[in-house]
Amino acid sequence: MKSGVLGVWKYRAFLPCDERVSIAEGGTPLYKTDRLADWVGVDELYIKNEGGNPTGSFKDRGMTVGVSKALEMGLSRVGCASTGNTSAALSIYGAKAGIDAIVLLPAGKVAMGKVAQALMHGANVISIKDNFDRALELVRQACNEKDIYLLNSVNPVRLEGQKTIGYEAVEQLGWEVPDRMFLPVGNAGNISAIHKGLREWRQHGIIEELPKMCGIQSEGSKPFVKAIKNNQKKITPEGEPETLATAIRIGNPVNGPKALNAVYDTGGTAESVSDQEIVEAQKKLARLEGIGVEPASASSVAGLKKLVDNGEVEPDEKIVCVTTGHLLKDSEEIIEVCKPPKEVEANLQTVLNHI
Ligand code: F0G
Image (cartoon, rainbow, N blue to C red; front, side, top):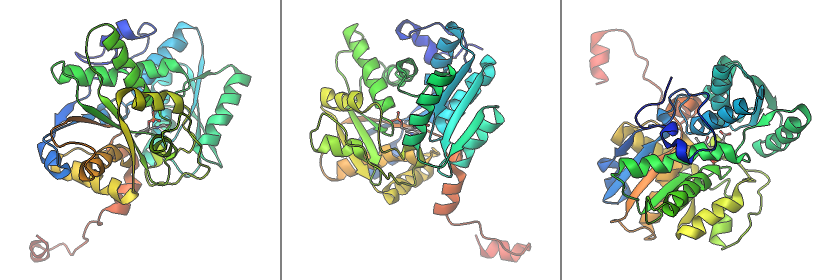
């Protein structure tokens, strides 16, 4: 199947290989969110909702390109470590391409919807008794030993696919570059990818300016934010990252140097938010705009609000927040942060009493 009007392969001229496996990834909606903008305190706010991808996260953009590259090279096995979404994406493209997908997950720290996807699409799922950073170290070694094509974001081919998020956002804004783009940061690949893509467009004269790239992390897992706040050129890894936003529970972002450059080069910024602020933003997205996202995704909006509140972002700036993964990825979290349904006797009067 070919991708739609918008979509990753529309930008093939900027991609490193031909389309060999596609499941109509990209072409996600850009919503103008006026009620959310009021809550945040800005005039114009757009949500680029990556939950609209085939597996419900932006990782599909990278994997259509990464697995196409694997096929081009005649490889029959692909692998990754993952906090969940990367593994789901690898699994569907592996399945569609008819090649083996091997994924390493941090045991007990991956939202069940993502594990379910990897299992159903037939990946070889290995849970290790440690965190994501260790899983990445191990999968890098295993891929070397076993001749498996590694498709974590250390592989630049994957990031080539993800840079199309920026292209679509600009196109959907009528070829206007937003003042700022906000992204959750975990392994720091996505913010680097979008920056790279837009820089290439600037080099080609397609756009003139770059958006200020703004990266948001959770307070319990913020090595990138610390480096930016201290104006450092290097990230100091954190040993015990912890956050309810398990997708970005990462202490040693492998794309740190590129991501730091994305922020410094564009005059952007980085901020951390508490798990509570993340849940609040997640509920606002859901209840003011009808946009259901997983916790990591909501951090982009939570971070924006914090920066507006403390005066670092002006209300008249045109903002795009990227929401990276779908609400249903992490239903355990929803049950934890929402009131459970009321269970009542099955008669009309009782039902009426509860309305
Ligand atoms: N949002 C979601 C929903 C993610 O799954 C991730 C990363 C990020 C944001 C951060 O993106 O790593 O490019 O800075 N998830 C990876 C995974 C690590 O394995 O699925 P990043």
